[in-house]
Image 1 (cartoon, rainbow, N blue to C red):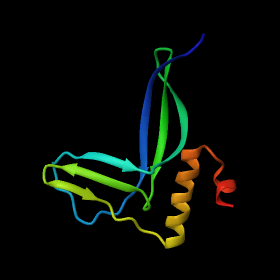
Image 2 (image 1 turned 90 degrees about the vertical axis):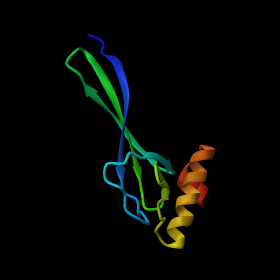
Image 3 (image 1 turned 90 degrees about the horizontal axis):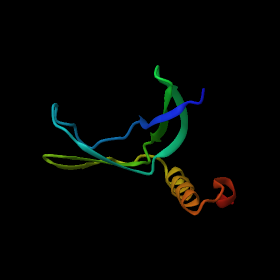
Image 4 (image 1 turned 180 degrees about the vertical axis):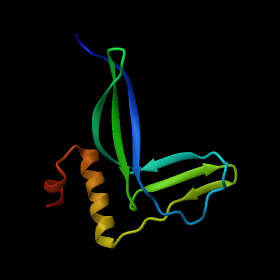
Length: 105
């Protein structure tokens, strides 16, 4: 029996450094820049369908904006200058569709 794709789902992992705390009970819209796609996995359902779970990971070098009732909270990027440069170069290689290691050379 052929399985049918039911839904594409997204799982986000990792962490970001915030300059301030969040307000308990407040809802936030999240804008994530520069997250890395880590893979996809099929999750079987009991009705003969499956969901495709896509995973992305944010890092301390990702920019995360939390938009709430009291304004925007922008994460603080951490990492050495060489880590930040490599992170930017990897993102640029991905945008151009090139191999990261070849682009780095």
